[in-house]
Image 1 (tube, rainbow, N blue to C red):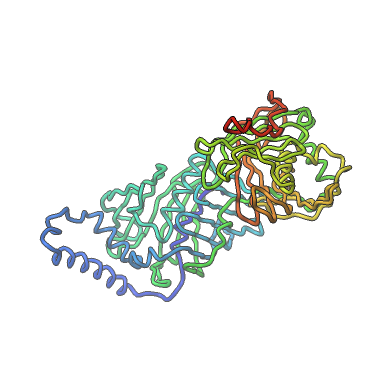
Image 2 (cartoon, helix red, strand yellow):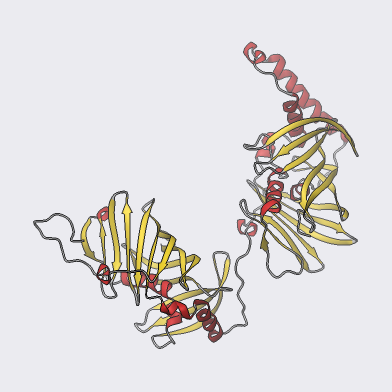
Length: 501
């Protein structure tokens, strides 16, 4: 079942004390009284202004019936659980919702998990029996994104980008209802039916994918009860081409503490059964034989530093020469290393001429070359010692951690992707651009340049603080690069202003 087990539909269910119909009627009468007082007691200019439309009055009644706008706007997160019946099978499920529009619904079908989630940008699903989740695309993704927002307990129909039309009254299973046609910014439409007697939602028709492509599904809301000041449906009945699926909630927690990471699709998964030799072998296979044939590389993109994102070009040559040229709003900056001397030109810090960098900086710059050329793939282990320290997370990916000791005695932790076996991060003690401490270089978004896998993003942090990030949009393998460009120029002639670049 691919589709939306209606996230928000479920999200409105809850448990708590039963509330008699009289209380619902009291809320409706209070709402109407407030509207009447506002119209009757307001100043003359307010009465002459455009009167509230029938849609406005319906929505005001609906908000008040649910618990009032103040209460709705106080909700930041929701956790709920219960059981659903699917073709004779009882399945427990849990729902997590988080402002503004993140959602995750997880069901247990005989030990196999069904997960549907939206992280605010990407919709994804993991079907029962599948080892890994997959991203949703196209109409299915748009439908799940709309459901996450439109069905959240805090949703207001006047949200920016949403179109709402009052399409009259209709008789539905529970009686007479106002029909709202709500269109999300992406074009997905929900039909919402609000009871004319109490203003609560009674039914919804929405697009869902249950494994046969998008179709209209329905959900009926029954047995409303008050939970922490909110009126929430205790029983919901989903209807689709595969039949009806009753859902019952037995717990509901408002403003629960929820780890934001659960809404994002898990990344790569590592295999704990692999040993060091197998991990390194797969790494070398990923790099490929053609990668060793690439001797030079040029790249273009942007660099983020000092709060600015500015144009950047970079050049690399084996074994470890590199040069990065930065246009800092008209001020040229250079960071370079020729394999022996690291140097820079940095008008922002007063280095107007080529200036040698401290020896401890070389380690950080050399790491960039290691990433580009895949030093672990080039070496058979003669210049360093490595051990497999286990599996750890790099952002949302599982990664193999290799503890490396270089020929100079430097200790480094290298992380290889759990599935692609490419470098994802390296951590060591050193110095970079004046900052000293634990340095972490994290790379991602690889692209293929003539057989060489080139990272599209390189982020350098010192003691947890991001110092700079390189964002490479284009890369050319085998570029014609002057070897002299990596070497620090001689100082400028004292009689000639400016560096000898």
